[in-house]
Length: 74
Ligand SMILES: [Zn+2]
Image 1 (cartoon, rainbow, N blue to C red):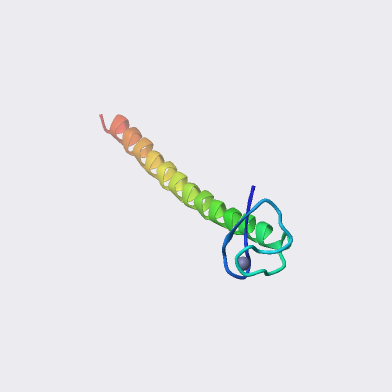
Image 2 (tube, rainbow, N blue to C red):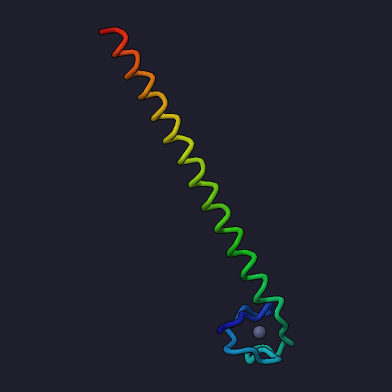
């Protein structure tokens, strides 16, 4: 389990009270902040997947409509 110092950004092993690089008192805040940014990134990825899914759905609807039109024309 690693934590990152909120002051110097250094990687801190385990859960020490103070950063070994800059001696800043550490709390669980830096860890939760890192988790929050990870969630935001995951949310952006989910949004992109949603847009891709909508595009694929629109294309398939167009193809089905074109296919129906061909069947009616023949
Ligand atoms: Zn530090």
